[in-house]
Image (cartoon, rainbow, N blue to C red; front, side):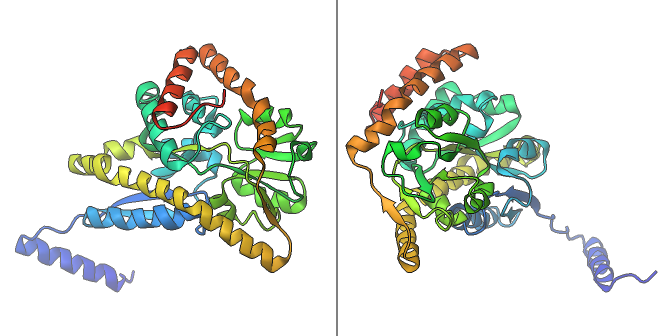
Length: 351
């Protein structure tokens, strides 16, 4: 059997090192990060790729980060299962996808017209999680790297949505289980659908209205089949970065400390900053695309018209408390604390 030259060379180097008493350099720890959004998404460009470089630089290449974009390692709704099971080591988790797990606690931040943006939202949710959900991630068997909130959602549609009545019978993608009833209250037909499946659904007409963030609209190019963008500005999505627990537990103590104190917080800052600055850029890009095509519009609702969307959602705040109580959590206390944290950070609850 012919032995490849590179193996002969590697063996020769190893023998020389052994003869001279020089230790061979350790192979870097391989960290696989699964990103179900495309490589063109702002989180890929502004967070995941820069974080890869940061980790490799700060650990002096003891850790090599392999970023896999476009859901090649698993879909968005499979992140928790995939990371917990070790299909990859770090993943982007959306709490509303896991409404029926202990991550339900985080969905308080996705209540309609609650949080206004990524910077305030991240502070509010981090404080709330520290008080009421610090044990959640251990219960579901993953390592919490930190939570974040997106920029506020817009409605993207194939026909203009200027009034609440325009939602009548529109097939509408809902971001999570809690938004099913809200869509019904608006007169729409709710459809639960993964973000990465929505472009094709809009293109084929099986979906009329898409709820998403402006930044994601650019990354997934939703503005092409849905060129009418209504600035509803609600909700935000509460997400988190999670790490496989066995991978984390197997890290040397100094690397664990480095991830906990420096690298994980840096990733969450990158994500928050990306959401914060992407909104205005996204609207500008969409306006340029609409102008070039001669079709499309960014629609701003009047305060009076927006209020028509807000009013029917009051029942969902009460429903969240009832659901929390049903699960054995102190629902009224959690809601009172959440509103108190909102006020602390300059926000007023709509209900």
